[in-house]
Length: 507
Ligand SMILES: CCCCCC/C=C\CCCCCCCC(=O)NCCO
Image (cartoon, rainbow, N blue to C red; front, side, top):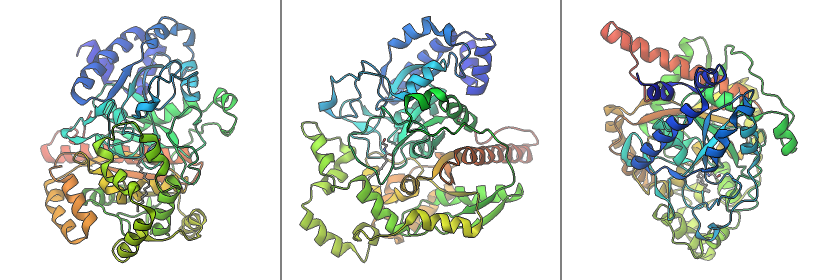
């Protein structure tokens, strides 16, 4: 194995160890990742710029030798502010407006010895889970170039999934760190909003207090996500952003868990592989001695309505205003068409739609989704919940037509629970055959079938959820799922051929 292949094969924990012990130098790691990133970008169009300041930072990195991420090259989604760089969010009017300062997360990471070296792509205006904008174009999926990488942190997912970065940061208000992770076979984590500083994470909207956005790490394995959280959660982050809590990162230990699970949500399209992923992981968790309890999400229709009204409280007016003077990317056409409809016409349509798509048509009603959900967890005495995440990767321009699937991820932004995604399987021929069941389920199911047809071999992931501020427990649950799946695949391989190998191994 060449030195480059060796470096690229290391997990984040292994890489930091080798750098700290001077078995590898920051220079050789940096240039190896830079070369790989340029190669991956040529194929997938996942990056927006190489951060030239990183070459300067590399020269003085020795002063950060004690940092948790000393010498680690790191990728960033473009909406994380970087001093002297634009954060356009794909909107023309935000070009040529360089930031005055780095965002807090980047400041802390630099102190911890990380070297931000590349910025990554996203969908125009960030409120979509595809990954295309008129400035940087469409990002492709590393596992099938005819499919989207997902979004909005799709550039991160594609780059990490293809091996061009070992750790990166996305942002998530509706699933943007988790959905692209599911599409690209990596792990993505949405912490409880507020646990990590959001200061300097740009959105094109102000407000959005009902559904909370948060930055979150993305990487090939769960340990890397945990190491990232440990590096960020420190006194300096609280000093720079005192709105974050003085809550040290608790590595803890893994005990037997009581796990709620569900494999679909009422009124929300779900693919056959999403359901199968949950069922298979449920069986593995039971075999490992955990207790699995059926869980029915409460008030899901109320929540869907709050998501929509919370993220777009003005009915999309600001969204349209921000796009003025910008060409509108094709991935947004379905959304923009809807936001452009006059309010009176929307009301008439809502009335007509009500019997077929109640969640899309209900008026805002008062309800306490957070406390009702917590009460449900307490009644069942749950530690965590296992559930589906949107997937497998869609054909281009379908995400905007399938906002009806967003409750699979956005529910946990609305509730402000923490949630993460772990790849567990691949789409089988049988999953593909089972797509015919979607023909019966109404218009959105038929659109979903078109979006995911031709997906055999694509990654399948599950979602792990924990209560607010239980980020460490959520990560430990994700780690348990990751390990059980790896072990099961090894055993499957051993049983099939009498020798041990990994069937499921994207990296
Ligand atoms: C029943 C349907 C409910 C739909 C609610 C849709 C409301 C708004 C659209 C949000 C789409 C979210 C996609 C993911 C975006 C994301 O997380 N962006 C990160 C920004 O930092």
